[in-house]
Length: 246
Ligand SMILES: O=C(O)CCC(=O)C(=O)O
Image 1 (cartoon, rainbow, N blue to C red):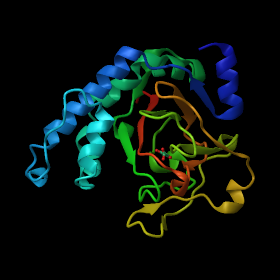
Image 2 (image 1 turned 90 degrees about the vertical axis):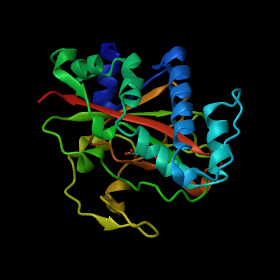
Image 3 (image 1 turned 180 degrees about the vertical axis):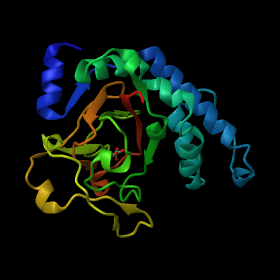
Image 4 (image 1 turned 180 degrees about the horizontal axis):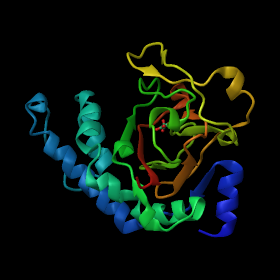
């Protein structure tokens, strides 16, 4: 990362690493996910599913095949890959610890990837129940030091139609707001939502990047899931985060 990137991060609260993930890593990751999916079918909960997937099917074709038979497969896959090494390793190619040292000083050994935020999000089209409203990651994950989140679309380029994340530009310049949780309509979970009057102080931008590109954004940057009503495809996103050791 050059000084240009460092300054861009300081000014905008994010950077995009184009093709940050190598093709080999990407292909291997999709193979591993397909294996996890096939492994899931051994679970007695999914005993009734027709297990005939073809070798030639890609991960997402196989996923759609099973998801159309049983929607619970999405939550189950999320759970079994959460925190797994394959997720932690996914972002290694874009050298997050080196990027962190360039942003915050020191060297790469001073930084670690956080397991807690190693996640594969699976958001079905039109009305995904998992939509996250405007929030700051730092309100959810308490760390002693600042951290950044990594976000990368897995199958389709991110857009309003394919599903994406939306940012409030330059909102990292405010501190973590001490908001309390709000019950989100239609969801059982509570979210730390940023009030509209704060969100409206900033321009909003839908992130449009390709699979293998990585969005790196500051723990204070206000962001949310793009509108699921506009989303026409299943959205898969790989997430991780990086902070200073200790
Ligand atoms: O990909 C999304 O829907 C948004 C992700 C997000 O806001 C988060 O993980 O904090």
